[in-house]
Image (cartoon, rainbow, N blue to C red; front, side, top):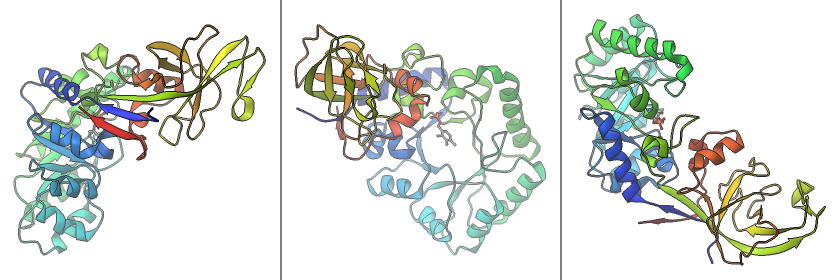
Length: 362
Ligand SMILES: *Cc1c(COP(=O)(O)O)cnc(C)c1O
């Protein structure tokens, strides 16, 4: 009997990428594998995508170095740039591509005594106000400094990130952001490669498609949009999170279940104990009634999720047995539905898979 296993379907992953390519047939694809490939496993996912992706993107230099030292040879992009002077040396040694979003980073590159110039994408702010400048004069200054810098390869790339690409009501703001990107590209004469669209941009904003695109969540078969599932977008979930029933009890109407008695049986029923909890990454915020599949049948959770276990209401006539399979999300139970029940986004749920969960790849 297994406690918790994340089954990772690399065939679905590759098919998703092929499906994504049909939306952006001319673009080169940077597979976003930050945060342990959204909880799916950094190296196995990247190696499965060796022939599918043109480059990889991560957020931490540790992730980039681990990919390089595992033998990944495609370009690896640091989406947030770097934070420490020493990182510049690693970027050069390991031939990484870094975003540069401010003058402090430019100065760190200027100070470095690397001999092999590094690949830089100048990161600008088109409207999110997270990283990068939104001021054309300041962008010009950063650009000129980088261009004068012998430690930097030319021409520079240009990169930015859309803040509301998943929000259809923000049509005007999306168009403004995309327009700002092209305005900077043209007025400041960027001749290098450009990259703007994330998953939502790829599916919904054709104008955001540049030479490079950066899909993340859609590669994993999950929708970036609140009202659509991955399946609606022609995608297949890559992760299926499974557990087992480890105990079964008959309950009488009025019986109180779990910490804080957060579930009270309204009628006689059967309670299943599942060997998965928030210590595995199942969200404790899942309310009573969050769907779970037991023997392929949708049943509701009952009571607070514990660290190592959770409860499901199997119904009065349950024939389920100890050892039976429980699907927490994945094929036949989109993680989008669990996220919605918990008031969060599916990105967070898959990212939070804990190290003790065993992972199996096919
Ligand atoms: C995470 C991230 C992406 C991928 O976003 P998805 O919505 O998962 O496609 C792209 N670009 C940047 C800068 C990111 O941080």
